[in-house]
Image (cartoon, rainbow, N blue to C red):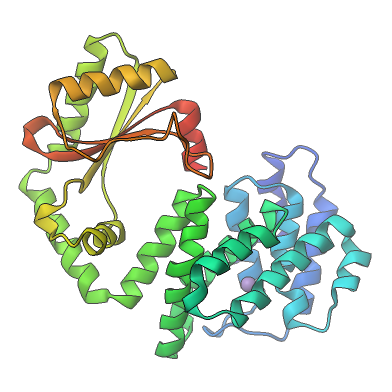
Amino acid sequence: MNLTASQLFKKISKYEISASEDAIKKAYNFSKKAHSNQFRGSGEQYFTHPLAVANYLTQMKLDSSTIITALLHDVVEDSEITIHNIRDEFGTEISKLVDGVTKLSKLDLKFGFAQAENFRKLLLASSDDIRVLLVKLADRLHNIRTIDGIKNEKKRSKICFETIEIFAPLAERLGINAIQRELEDRCFAILKPETRDSILKRLKLIYSQDESNIPYITKEIETLLKKNNIKCYVTGRIKSSYSIWKKMQYKNLSMDQLSDIMAFRVIVDDVPNCYKSLGLLHQDYTAIMGRFKDYISAPKRNGYQSLHSSLIGPKKTRIEVQIRTSIMNEFALN
Ligand code: MN
């Protein structure tokens, strides 16, 4: 990670007009100095890590306090600098955030896997500011992206296991699907490489048998809804290898019995059109019993809303469909 302080600032200033270049530069140089004699497992300068975390959070368009916190997140734990120094230099808001992240990192070490669910609850409860959790998740994501730097195989597995048990579900709870999926997929590749390979091979086979399935089904759904005067935007994808494996474990199914290797998303203008679209799909295709979920009427705990159903869709293929408005979609993808 070779990003200068001004390049980092430029990224932030694109979405936060009032961001201060001086504040970003100060945190950048402060962190760089504090970590100057430290190196990562890969041999890289340690500072590349907080910088990469900060950079990732700019992609999520988080405010400059969060970016500064990301730059400083390991300073108190790994150097002589205390939280009081941080408060004196950067003020109360930043010091509270950095303190929150430092405390979460200490919790990591104390808890065993048996209490994963308790630990997740504790994480949620102990951060009254969601930005603390976001920095922690981005921190974990970068550690996983660079896990090859850790040579000890046992340590690698422990980190991946903890990530799948605690941090991926936390990301899911917060509605950050991109982080959840990447954490799961990377850890799955390390924990169960053969299983993952065989699922990927099967997926490839299924996909190559009829490569045009996804665009074809997408078109079919679109045509059906548009014929009924519903403005819509439909996308399709093959599910991730980890989510397929999880479902196989959970429901004790073989790959052939899985109903929803393909998932389609239907975006419409408003709530009445969500239900109307669902009705039309259920009229034209057979719904698979027990698979319908109405998260519009009863949202998930993180506020996620959508209608989910599984169908025997076009070409007699079993598919999963998610129907939601564009506002719900923005919420789900953030
Ligand atoms: Mn870190």
